[in-house]
Image (cartoon, rainbow, N blue to C red; front, side, top):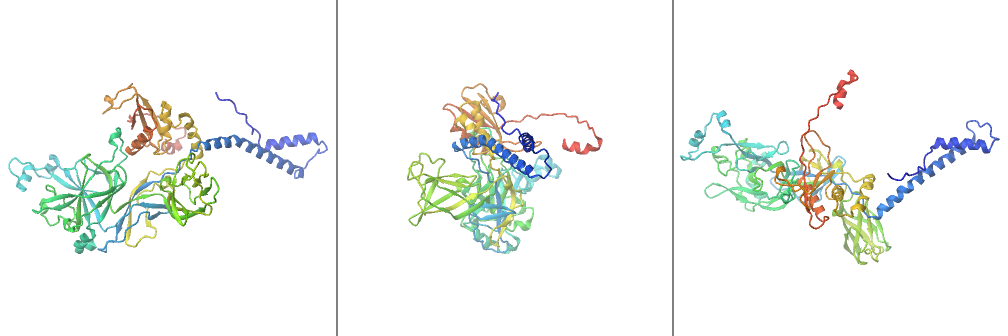
Length: 606
């Protein structure tokens, strides 16, 4: 039981007024009758208000001292996390020439929200259709009135050769799951189609596309969970260009993947592909006999023959590691987008030559990793480095610390905690991103404007932004920071693992449970318990549970948390960060109404 704390504020304004009047009657008996509105009442009310204010402020002293002590630990509040997503920017469908590049850091708007693109984009006029060769079962053939022998005779197969029936199926990105479960060859076929206005200039379109870097937006189907850390590495996706050989057969040429921010489709991102400089390698396969569309290595048939004649090129996407690849979205001309604003080339202050100088940035919720700060020296800008702590830094070290949530920059004392900015030297912000929070989790279709964009750029927003989290409140920090004194950032006890996981700054965790000695296996039956040195941590991400949609950790969360904890465990600890397996529980509830008139409202609330 904790020690009882005396309450210094156990009386309110009315109590103080009543006591003052009683004492006044004792000490000044001459004031036998005081009418309402007498000046004495005003003095009584004034001193009662002053007394109550002093008591209130006196009660804040312990809270102030507690926060001062917590600030000495130099553990700042966590800033907001920005939502991430994808947008597509197409070129005008009326011009063969490619428009100007969309530069890195371009600004977008969705109502009051400012957003920033990541990476350079070359918009094209191409649209995308995603197709697969869907296998047909014997029952499907029978329903169509076709037999395997009919197919063998039609295609002239030799005796003993058995046809493998399929039908082309178009998948609509963003509206349905892109799944290779029933695919014949475990591959997506991507038809890159020129606009109708440029059908007669298709050859010029191909010539302008030769050697271009094509941005393909890609997103996973869902937040897949993982139970083995070695499976969380980025997987390799194979991107190929469909072309024709000397005999007219379909061949596939591997494309150079310059960058892949999706980690192989494990998260929303953009794959940058370099197209060949020889436009003669592009082929539409529109002039072949329709009977042979999709046969062998050929791409499947498009539903619309008119669109088939406008195909500028075909791409094929497959994943040898995961033949049954499942995706949520694919789109051409994609670019990563953050729900944050961008500031560049901003003078924020002058050096005063004094120790421990503090400069306030014009924004709060700064993305610390993006802050680039320069100090002017001898007419040139010198880049200073951000560090976590100034203590122990050399006197001539060009370093500073940042409070990302409040937007304050702290410089050293010039003795044992880093260098001071010279007196009169300008301090410049080369760039930083700011903002974030849950408000940035925008649904598809809400981003509609490119700030100062070209009229030849057409914006599409077909995939939502996710991952935005609000900044940590003072109350939340007051609960988290004292835990640092118990575990000292080292995972030793069972409680340490739980608290460090829930307080990690890398990837938010709503709940963590530790199972000591639990060694996971390929399945639950193969798991072992009581194994010395093994610690298994089960985690859940933030999110409101819904019927049939229990929050599950993503593979990225498991990987990030494993890497964070691995640097804090004791030598010899075998650590596993796992996703829990949920067991369905059925509960029967009987609701008895007291008022029949509220039946509908009561049932809805339940």
